[in-house]
Length: 419
Image (cartoon, rainbow, N blue to C red):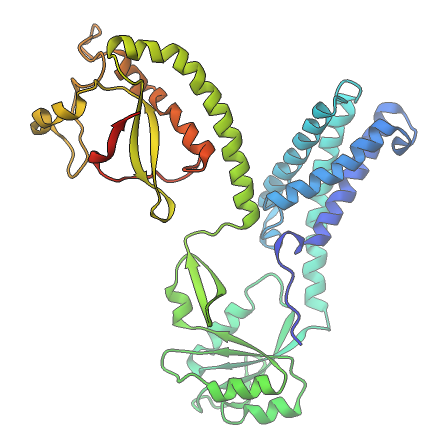
């Protein structure tokens, strides 16, 4: 039976536990330095904050990538990650104190001393524990026994890549070649146990936990061998060779119908990250909509007085999965802008559907010039300062678009209407 490696935010549970302990130790030291002694857990206020520290750490770990690649990070990389982690935990804890209205009773000196000591202890403990984990990996006698089945011309590169990670919880105990071209009993200190036709006998006689099979484009797929290995009760790891190399971006295996496929994407997002982003969009959307209401009071009358009509402008855009939706902006052009565009096409500087020209007379108030001859009407002002974009926070709140994301495609310029 194959034991899958832990995944997700609990993969490095040991580092999480150590960070929790480090913060509690830092809190105890800070309390002792400030109060001169005593048991902080006997004080209801400080006991409550000690518990909130643990909860805040769990929240930060769940929503961030604090421990991703922790065993590969150097001293500087670990320090920056530790600073970021400590900062987020302390900010969240501070927010808890304000929400629960305990900030006035809680010692700020204790809080900031705790943050400083926590940063120092957590960084040192992370470095030392990583050394222990890596050293233990080198001396661990309980590693899985693995046999490598590979083409003779790729064996050296394959071994190097297999052993390139910081943690090797397996030992390559034998090599079997896809062909008979290699002569010898030892390769880089690893015994050669035969070829693809004789490896089954070795697997039946010797203690082997897993088999790694590297398939190349020039070799036929060893279906018979793989079926026999699985029948023996051994675990098979199948490398996809050039297929794997040809896929860029992040790769993972999933099921589509009855097919097992390797999926590649420039980036991936987990459900918790989607939730985190949506919370950010809703928060930003609410704040942006409130700011838009204020701008309506200020900008709206200025637009209407200069060009009577709707103060909003809408345009059809194409979003995720081809979904069409309307984005909203403050109207910065006169009502007859589309009709007048045909007269100005000869001055267009853009190709295709885009239209752009210097000193566009269709912009509201463009006839008004500053001392340098540049337009300074309300339309030019809101376009230059991007204030015309603020109504799009309504799209963010609705979920049509996000605060962070790619620009949605225009359907075409016939999809323009006045709101």
